[in-house]
Image (cartoon, rainbow, N blue to C red; front, side):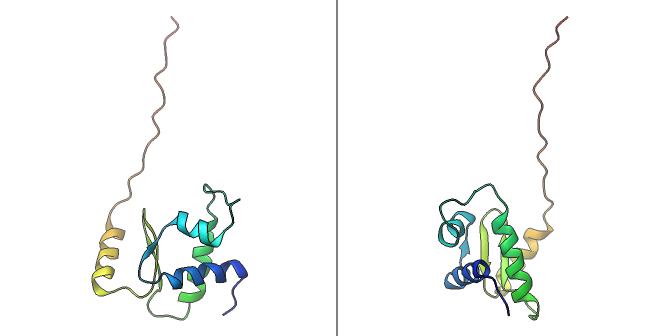
Amino acid sequence: MALTAKEYALLEYLARNAGRVVGRAEIAEHVWDETFDPFSNLIEVYVNRVRRKIDAESSKPLLHTRRGAGYLFGPLSDADAADAADESALPRQRIKAVSPARKSHA
């Protein structure tokens, strides 16, 4: 499988921490340098690239997203798989921006 240097660094870090959830800040600290913009979606882009490559020939995915927590590398146990299914079944709530009240100038 062909990986770029950054994809390899990300996969290596996730593999070294297999079985535990690794957060975005931790990934940014260990895989990217200090000039990394924490508001960019670069981590998500690279996670998705790595996920496509490593899960392409596998019947069970190895790279899992834990919404609000980070990423988990490794096969899921039956309990983890059930939790992941429950989590994905939950409706996502959209937060609506509240505009400030307008003052009447009359």
